[in-house]
Image (cartoon, rainbow, N blue to C red; front, top):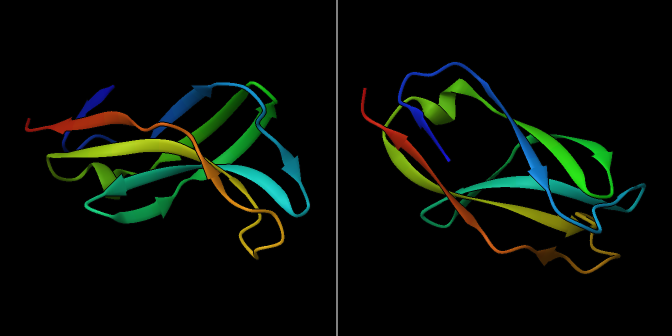
Length: 93
């Protein structure tokens, strides 16, 4: 997956399995660069599909980010699990 630096917001569709959308257990798409994680605005579509918005601010400069899904309770009552990450490259214009 890739985009050109300076791109506007991008809506990403994530396909998988066992995604959840419950009060204390949900699935969120994460943008990770150099150990710094940003939770993307994520919409639960179904147990096999999420959509997430990568904001233009994250696409402003060339970078290789990891995109993954984290499922669990951010408050801590359900342990977090993470999917394998996929590279998302923001290339120079």
